[in-house]
Length: 240
Ligand SMILES: Nc1ncnc2c1ncn2[C@@H]1O[C@H](COP(=O)(O)OP(=O)(O)OP(=O)(O)O)[C@@H](O)[C@H]1O
Ligand SMILES: [Mg+2]
Image (cartoon, rainbow, N blue to C red):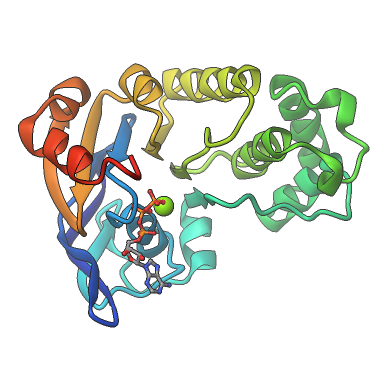
């Protein structure tokens, strides 16, 4: 079943076609990899899918509803949530309270939010820092906390923008395990990452973008080994 679909999704910034007539489908229960060289338009796609940017043209369909002009809040309430390339947590309150706030913002009772927060802290190996201000955590720990905030009420689809970037390998494995476990339970993801071994490991299918366009899609390994994709990365070798 198709959970999310774009038709001709486009966004220009001045003269730059950041996203140019992109058609992507995400099947329920899959982890779709979204790859491509720096500046190819991946974050801009996620920004439009999650309501942070309005497309110039094209449509977004989520669970058979046209959600193209919906706000981030409307989309989050329907179960479409994204994580940022730059982590966003409340730095001056504790990890535990960050999770509590996230849960209550998603209409959980304080009691339910607290119980889920405790379980997530354990699963994400953050129990020992649960009462520290989120601002005092390492970058990797903040990412793990953001995972918890995103999953305090599991979304129907989670959009992850480079969750593994600049994260210690131990925490990277904690994150990958978290994604694997949720996927086994039926969770749908779109994963943007430059970490190709992790993309091959986690994603059954991948879409590769270059210069705002989709240049390949299909089984992940076949996409990464296809001629247009290799050419796109070599052409941008200084960034890739
Ligand atoms: N707010 C903006 N204003 C102007 N140009 C932008 C803006 N956001 C993105 N761009 C441009 O749009 C293009 C696509 O950028 P985007 O951030 O979506 O790429 P990306 O694939 O996520 O890259 P990276 O892998 O480096 O994160 C780039 O040329 C970028 O410079
Ligand atoms: Mg990006």
